[in-house]
Image (tube, rainbow, N blue to C red; front, side, top):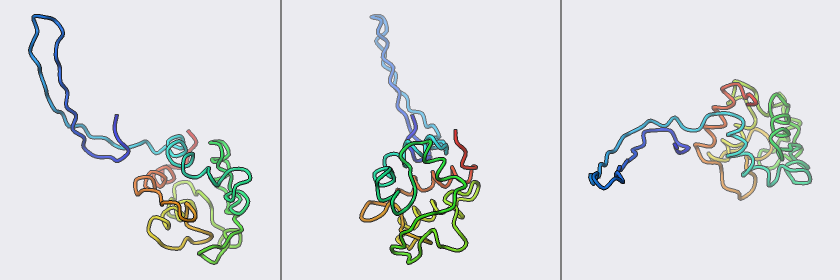
Amino acid sequence: TCPEAPGPRTISVTVSPGAPSCNTVTSQSVTVMCRGLAPTFTTVYTRIIGPRCTGCHHPGGSGVTVGMLDLSTPAAAFANLVGVNAQGTGADTSGVTCASAMPLPVRVAPFDAHGSLLYNKIESKLTGTNASCGSPMPAGNTAALTTDEVLLIAAWIDDGARDD
């Protein structure tokens, strides 16, 4: 299997036949090109949103009480992200609440990662800049998503942000 990051990978294969008359050991290396993870909603949710976002973005969590965004299940996450205007009431480091920002940001605008609030918030945390509204994500002292994770989310959005 290929790792998350795309690029060439060298695989070594060793064959040692089990028959008594075959005592030759053959070893060979091959280089394969891995394209990386498919930019699907399932991949984005299982690899990133589920493990990294649902700690806060669940019913009763600050991501729902302040951010007004429930990501607790794949169905809730998709329904609350794609094509939905921001509703967050916390201004935090940006000084602007997402519910009052003008124009009202769309959480995920299909085919437009750079115009999507989700991308803006995770990319701002990665680069150490203010989000356009509310807080960079993940909030607080939580580590930023990796560059590969941010790029995977951007690829999913730019590919139409479809539910697979």
